[in-house]
Length: 141
Image (tube, rainbow, N blue to C red; front, side, top):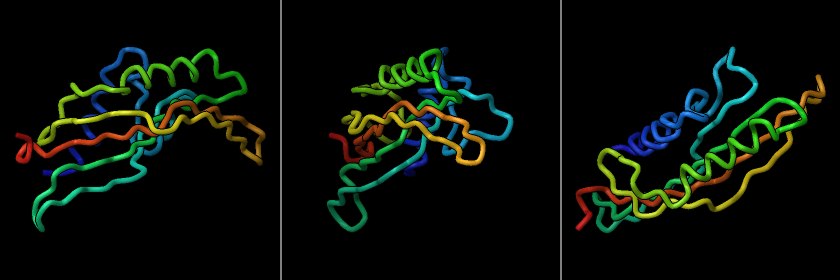
């Protein structure tokens, strides 16, 4: 069993959405992507072992944020950040190979304005830190 399954499930769930799905990337958007996209990245991981070779649950915190260029995020950044929240908050039905999701919640909100010092370009970030607690299938009663 691999935590890659959790990563893949989060990406697949977001990419299936007709509003933001075409622009969802892991860690960094590739070159040539337009000025509005969603980034997913892992911030933290912890496991609760019960024996040396067994885990009761995995807890993974993801950064999930909409990023948009320019000073006005109202046309895409804010709605995309709200859509991310709708897609993730308290969702226990996301299929994950080898796991059962026990909890999914936003632990922190993200709202950042990033300024490129060289060009004075502005990037708006909207989203949050989403914590997933998942139990490996072999330990689910």
